[in-house]
Length: 151
Image (cartoon, rainbow, N blue to C red; front, side, top):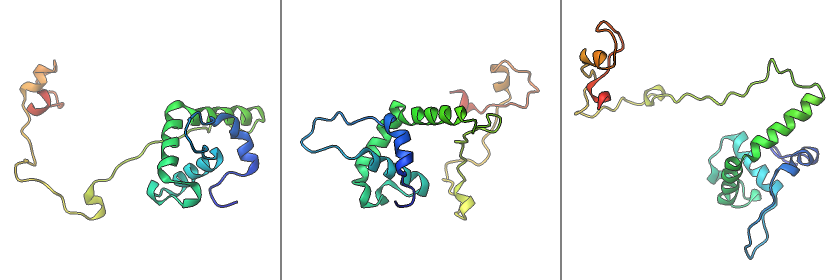
């Protein structure tokens, strides 16, 4: 078994939740375990889909299954089933359980790139005091809108 691939025990746990292929093509369907291992390889390494090793099959096929399974809720069902199993065994402390899917994109300048501002873009756009009144706020409000945002 290679890195980032499911063991036989792990595959036995998730296999019932990974759908069988219903395609009616002339070629046999790809092995679901290999597809799932390819998806896990991408998710664990952070590599682009095009860099997926050939042992997992064409990257387009693995990506298509990832997209389809994500949209149909396959991964959510797997997580839910594993949570139920672990909870029954008393292995989950629900006070600590959380999944953080947040990310923050850094500006180009954070990596050392120059700030690119076109000549027709002003750095400090004028804020209009009447925007606060239009929004139903007091004139002394610090929440000022630009004329562009009101359009």
